Structure formats: structure tokens, C-alpha cells
Length: 178
Image (cartoon, rainbow, N blue to C red; front, side, top):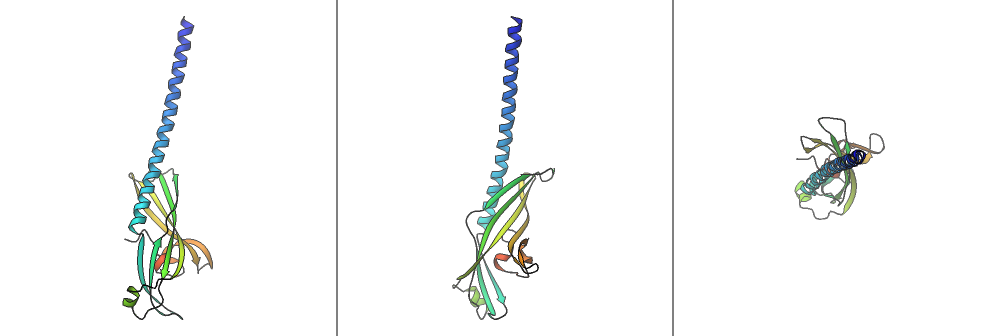
């Protein structure tokens, strides 16, 4: 009888430990899912707030004049979240998305460019934003653009506004602009 009680007690103990082990794994998965979903909500809110931007700038060279540029975020983005060893920022989140710039033809004045509706010439620039999870919220840390970089004569990820001197349109920070 005593062997039977020990065997039953051992089985109950093992089942209990198995439940705790399975439950703690489920808890971690749930926590990870919450973290990823919170970043997804943050990115969607940031993209929605900056879905469309219009920029007016003076163009030089053969096609000199004032140009309007309507910048739009294309739907969809890629997302990645990584755990870190940092106590301050235990997670880093990265999102990549495309911004399309639609240009007007050159105008005689900034006012004409502001009123332009002939936004036909378009191009796209990939953007990458990096967030850190700090104090239970996502904080934007950087934004980069992937485009032709004149300083190295190749495409690369760089701080958006430093892309070979282009200080306008889809080459500017898209989310981090106040």
C-alpha cells in the first residue's frame, strides 16, 4: 500500500510540475504576443498620423522652379521584435515600409506649387524605424531611408535627411517629424 501511495504521489507531483512548466511557457508566449501587438498598434498609429505629407521645395538645375511633393505611405509594413539584454530597453522593434513621393512639374512660385494638382512623377523610398520598449511603451529611436546615397554612389540605409543632400519629400524622416 505504501508503494502505491508513493507511486501515486510521484505521478501527481510530476503532472503538477508539467502543468507549471506548460503554464509558464504559455505565460511567456502570451507576454511576447502582447509586446508584439503593442508595437503593431504603435506603428499603425504613427503611420496613420503621417499617412500623407506635402512638401514644397525649390529645385535647381535644368528643371528649376518650385516643386510640390505629395508623400504617401504604401499599405503594409514588415515588423520584427528582438529581446535584448538591456534592463532599460528589454525589446527593440523594427518596422520597414515604403514612402512614395509624387512630384509636380516645376512652378514659378511656392504658392503655385502649393496649389499644384499635377502630381504625376513618382518614386519610392524604403524607410526603417527602430523603437525601444521602455517603461512599458514604445519609444522611437531612429528612422533611416534606403535609397541611392550620392556620397557612396550606391544604395544604402542612412539617416533620411542625409541622403546625398536631399532635404525634401520621401527622403525626410516620415514618422519622427513632429
